[in-house]
Length: 183
Image 1 (cartoon, rainbow, N blue to C red):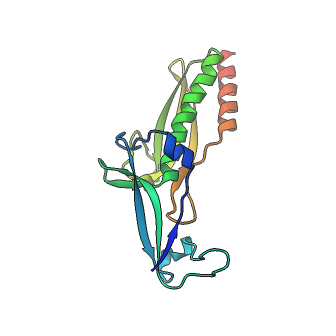
Image 2: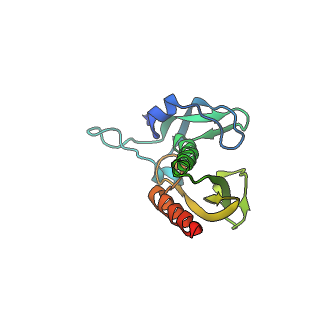
Image 3: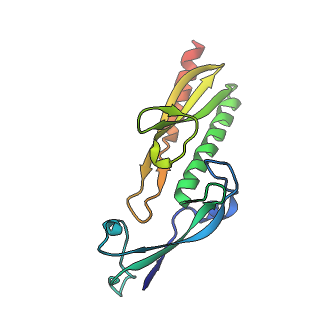
């Protein structure tokens, strides 16, 4: 059987950060994930069956091998890109608070998930149920804005999910909202 090894996600972030499950907050381990895909299956459109530059295309089913995070508590495998996206949002929130605190503005930022049905919840069970991750920004115990980070799915391989963060736009909008509340 043909084998194809691949890796997505920043290897430095994977190796040098501590990783905790975004659902249960337990520490994650790294395991090897294997998936056999037939070229005739529906999901074959998401996989690359080429075998290097000169050897052409693989024939028959192929075993795709890569590493993923694993939560023993939830018994779930989490793609590197998905987990790192959740972590990057937390890091962005922390840096955003620090940035405005240096200007003398104390912000409280909460994460809320908007489901596909349009409901807003604090916790999620399945990532597939999320439409947006919303950042609720409060100043002096008053909500000054909500910023939606859309959940996007990649179009290849295991099709991991990630959040699109428009950092500059969020920073600019919060600055404008803080200036407007001063007036």
